[in-house]
Amino acid sequence: MTVTETRPSTADSSRPAPTPAQRVAAIPMQIAKSPHFARVLFPIALFAVWLLSLAAVEEIWPFAVDVLPTPSEVGAFMWDEFITDTLARKNLYETFYISLRRLMSGFAIAMVLGTALGLAMGLSRATNAFCHDWTMAILAMPALAWALFNSIIFGFDDRGPILTVILAGIPFVIVNVREGVRNTPRELFDMARSFQVPQSKVIRHVLVPSLMPFMFAAARYCFSIGWKGLVIAEVFGGQDGAGWTIKFWYDAHRAHGVVGYAAFFVIFAILFERLVFEPISRRAFRWRPQLQTEVVEEAFGEHHEHYGEEETARH
Amino acid sequence: MAEIRIKNLHKEFGTGQDKVVALENVNLEITGHSFVSIVGPSGCGKSTLLNILTGIETPTNGTVDITSDGHVAAPGYVFQAARLLPWRTVTDNLLFVQEDRSDSTKQRCQRYLEMVQLGDKGDKFPGELSGGMQQRVGIARAFSIEPDVLFMDEPFSHLDAITARALRRELHHMWDETKKMVVFVTHDVGEAVELSNRILVFAKGGSLEDDIQIDLPFPRDPADDEVAVAKAHVLRKFEELDLLAS
Ligand SMILES: Nc1ncnc2c1ncn2[C@@H]1O[C@H](COP(=O)(O)OP(=O)(O)OP(=O)(O)O)[C@@H](O)[C@H]1O
Ligand SMILES: [Mg+2]
Image (cartoon, rainbow over all chains, first blue to last red; front, side, top):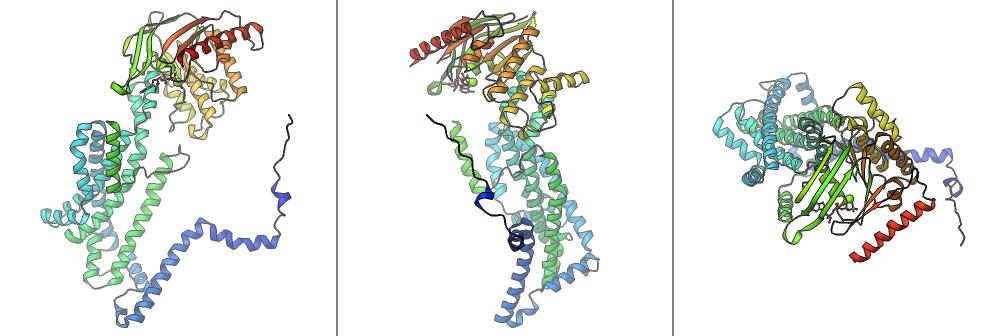
């Protein structure tokens, strides 16, 4: 028997090194492939579509030009709001402060209540059986229905919008925490038991960290769903706040006001994600090779199916 | 000195059609300065036995007692898979199983990390280490509490030959110096013969089929005639049982 050894050929021998001219020629391709370019490209594309559709509508239906907002109108509106020069009753900062206070109250209550319920449902089959359909019902209910319902009950004060935030957000907290409890790492609890580690230490170093990714996903969903629920609640049952102000510009037939305010909304949500959630998640999940905080992708139908399978598998 | 007493031990998982017998009427005593290896085919209940001895599982029937000089012995357990806390650094994984966080404890943990050649990896998270490195952290963790009895479940099976050899030597030294008891599960008969003074052979269905004493001096060189003969003897037993099982 003979043993032959073949060395893998190096790149240099099979392909000549690129000349400087070729390198320069390759730069546009490199830029086009970079993720930064893709990020910048998105708003540019959006802007182009906006201008094109304006032009198209003008072509087909010339007298619509007053209704559709142009980028410069929206930009001017946003700048006026930014420097608190507004026709609305409250300026941009007062308005967002009011909405944010409601959002945070509802968010905090939903997180606390949802965590308690999720823990109970994860630990006890009976509690889960009792609460499961209710959770799904709340999840299936449109935020609009909650908003209308709450404004009928509470009239035009803070309670309606806050309750809407709670009801919109809480199913996501419950479902995520419950999945977290069901996915606690048994083999690590066993390890701790064999080394006779005290219970309090096990809770702090095993249980809580294992729930963290689920809590984090819960917080993210609850925040963004709650934010949308709040706007709807303020449109129908508020006298102030961001949702109410959008309605105000709508009633005043100022399309640029509606679009501009919605843009503030989006900017706020993105800033919050970047400045609050991302840094916290980077710190909390340093131990993960790659970040994946969306643990439970909640979709009403899908989850139901998955749940059914799991139940049959257990019996 | 630690003592292990196992009487009429029986362990089943599941009920009805899914019933699996993992251990069948095991009677066993291990006393003193023993290095006991447990060998047997996959699924014969080796890990289950260690889990019962360390209190993770409870027996279906029978009793186990582990004492050390009259009190309950402190076990150290090296698992078949490393079982580290992924969200804690290597050092914090070792500190997690300690009784305190004093300077002397920290120094002891560092010493055992150095023993497994991971002295510079204390600040890393388990996810940043290779599988073999994680396994070595698991070994250091069990050593670092300086247990009365050390249970090891195929601790070297994921390591390269050279590292495994070095760690076998360390394990032997520790056992020799501290006079502690080691219960060692392995698939590798050569490894069992090299390290132990007693080899227990389990068969499919979880029964203890053979109990072999090996009274050769240490260190044992696999090339040595007497060691080779002992290994051949155990292998023959193993084969006989395998034939019986099939
Ligand atoms: N938690 C459990 N639930 C149900 N069955 C189990 C459980 N743990 C072990 N078993 C079963 O008990 C038997 C013995 O398993 P065990 O893990 O002790 O085998 P082993 O000898 O360690 O095998 P290996 O060499 O492959 O590690 C197997 O049939 C296994 O399927
Ligand atoms: Mg095993």
